[in-house]
Image 1 (tube, rainbow, N blue to C red):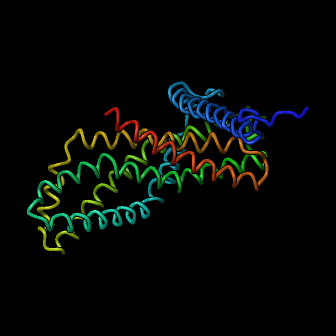
Image 2: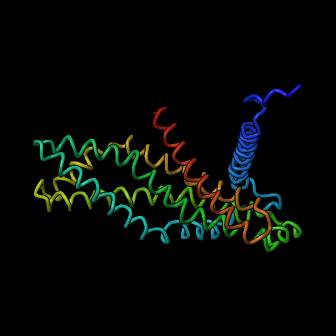
Image 3: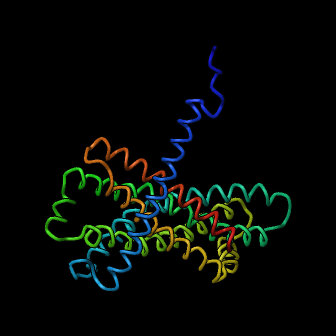
Length: 273
């Protein structure tokens, strides 16, 4: 008597797919737990010091702000100019239908401030500074520097992770402000060259549309994205296998995770607020 052919439930492909999905879910939960623990730990260290009783060094935090801020300033300007030119080209085409300058600048400014600037800055910082942080920590794991710190009774979380989280909390909102005004200035210059209004008029219209709540939403998003980027990068960097090849894989995984988390968080915040 011949055995019945395996049904869809017993298909090796389906079983393997379910197993991979389960592992992905478990890994995602574990990563979320590590990220949350690092964020809470950074706040606790800021308030009462680390396991060695020492608080976070202000100088170390300033160094992290410099790493994520001024070093990314040129990238922010280039990104802002590119976005401003794209928006300007689109508006020039749209405004050819009629005299809608006030309406178009107002709506564009709100969208740009609340959505475009914080989202693109966060993605840029994730790819630039977040990847670098994950690589630095991964190399320290591979060369057993993290183990050496712990053997000396020092906390890598206090010395390395918490300053990066606090630095990102300051640097990302500052970069977001920089990009906002870079986009507005580029947009004003382009529309002026296109003969659609003076630079002063366009900047005035944009600033008048930028209400405190609009700017506050952008800075609140940036203040959320910054620490989240640093925490995800640190969580991934601290758990890579101690080989240089796997450090590269860990950095790639951290970058994808950071960008995916930023996009998902932005979508959820948009739905809620």
